[in-house]
Length: 391
Image (cartoon, rainbow, N blue to C red; front, side):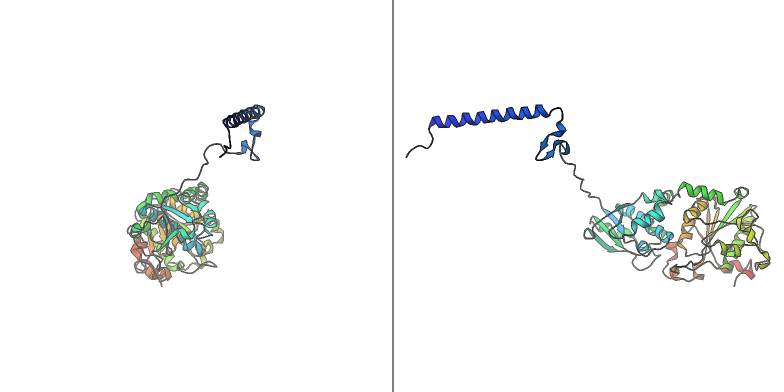
């Protein structure tokens, strides 16, 4: 058989290949020297070298943290700020109990961004910072039920410690029980510090001459257009009698007592307290004492009506000035928060919710809704002092 390549042919190919390699190296060196002054102009596969990221590509680290989210029923149904605060505070508390990150899932509830922006972040910026707003795919969450039937009964969330899935979704409603978050009371109160502008406005609501007085703050609520009517409004006879009762109680200990009325209907409050409104108050010009229908035994005091520019302003007022809080609408969720966030030394009174028997009360376990340190007021005990005020 004839040989295909001779030895001389082999060496020729090797020498030729070596020469081609040397030629390519020379061309490379020439190319680099010509572009050394402007290396960013060097092109590689039609792309400028400067546009390429040199080194390893930064990939986002995998997030292995365990999260928890609520279905945010109050956001879905566009409830008021009091009920939304309950659900968010419950999420905060549950996340701490379970050792998970509290997440607000925009894919689960599209209104969450709008709600946080309008109702929470502006008024309580520190509170909003406790939650991560993100998009979590529904296929990656593990749903469980908790507090699925009643607004205001506590169900122990620590039973969910046995769940090890990464993203936990709790389906439930309202979560209106302080027991979900009261273990973290100091953190909740600090996080729900109103924006400084609200504190400034609250300062303007009380005239200088009354700032050193012992202040009884009466929260009132009247039904507004569009309200779901789950919670009963304040009753005028109870509200006035309970206020007179508390004024008399604290005046007897030698205190200089003034009353401030907080609520969503200042005109209603003006009609109820028109015989007590001080001359320095804006509403004094509407006074008409000939319409008074109140007890002849009503003690002397001045009533101040706040203009209620925003719920956050009322919280700031309560936190800075109120020595006593009286909840005349005992199932009002926002009234509850005024009491919970009042200054540490404040004493809290609330009407016996049995006397209103609304839907909130029907779904309530009282020991889960009202703190043991709060004081219940019944119409019967007021009737002994002001019999003509109570039906």
